[in-house]
Length: 182
Image (cartoon, rainbow, N blue to C red):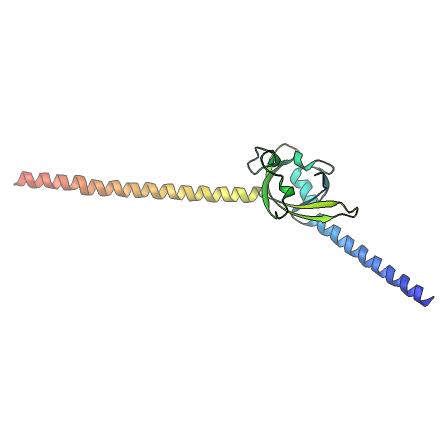
């Protein structure tokens, strides 16, 4: 009797710990800043967290992932010209675009990992990070570099023309003056 009571107590404690761990994982899944999508072996989106829903503008659960996936230029489906990035065994990072519900293309970086689900079927976890803000900052930085280079090139050209005027025409006028005095 004591043995069975102790066993039930241990089982109860383990279930309680598992429940607590599960609640923590669910909280983490819902509040992580990167979008997380879980994709089955047929490339259907099984689950996604709030960040992924906000990125795509709606809940794409039970939707075919390839319908929203495009290459980094937003022109083609990746699988139209290359092997789908989900089939790369060693791939950990990929840049592409996802189409949201408004039809807008959102540049994202994706990292993948695989695991076996409760039903023993393979699942893929996609961690998706929005690159829109990063691209805007990068575009502004490049714009500033180009503008600074253009201004520097204009200043250098003005200095060169000034030297040529001073050295070329100035010397010619001085030579003419010397010739006239002679």
